[in-house]
Length: 313
Image (cartoon, rainbow, N blue to C red; front, side, top):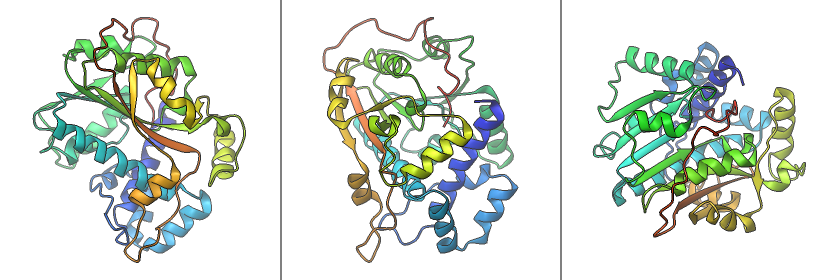
C-alpha cells in the first residue's frame, strides 16, 4: 500500500476510536481522547456533529461490526497493555503504530518501560508533527523508529535504538497479520519467541475460512467487498483449533484467544444489560507469551520480507 493509503487507513481507525470514545452507553467507556487530533476535515466534521446514534447507524449500514470492532480491539489491547505493565514488562514495541496514542494515554503506567514505536517514515512524521502542534510532549521513554523495510530489518532497526532481547517485552500488533503471507507472520512471531522469558505479543488474526472465501460471519460480506474494491485481500488466517499449535512452533504459548462472542460479552455490554452492537465475526484476538526456558537465536535478520503492509494499521 502506498504512503497516502497508509495514512488514510490510520485516519479511518483514529476516526472510529474518536467516535466510540463518546459512547456513553457502554458499561465501561472506550476512551482515546487523542484520536480526534489526527482527523482530516471530513472526519473532523462528522465527529463534531455529535449525533452518536446517527453516526453509529451510518457506520453499521456501511460496514456491520466495524463500530463494535473498534471498541473491542481498542479495549482489549489497552487491557493487555495495562496488565503487562503491572506485571513488570521492561520494553514495549508498537509494530505499525499508525495513530496509536497508548504511550501518551498510559504515560504514568509506562513510566519505567522503554517504548519503541515502529512505523512507515511518512506516517510517523505526520503523527509526530500533529502531536507537537497540539502541545502533546512526547514521553521521555518513547523512541520513534521510522523504518523502510525495503532497506532494513526489524531486528536491525530495534537493535540500533537500544532494544534488548534479554528484557521482558510486550509487542502490540494491530490490524496487520491478515494482510501478510504466512511466512512473514511466522518470522514476526519467531522474533517474539526469541525474546526474554515473560515477553509476549497481542495481535488480531482472521479466520482461515474467511480468507478462503467464506463470508458468512457477521460483517463478512461487507468487509470482503471492501477488500476486493481496494485490492488488498486477506492472505493469512487460522482456525481457532490450530492457533495454539501454530504459535508453539514459534516458541510461544497462548494466554488468551478470544472470538467475537467473548469479545462482545467482555467489552460491548451496555447499561441496560444488552449489547451496544456486534463485532466482526471473522477476526479473533490472541495474546501469546514466550515459552519458559526457550533460549534460541531466532530473530528477524536480513531475510525479513519487505511486505508493503507489514507496518500498516
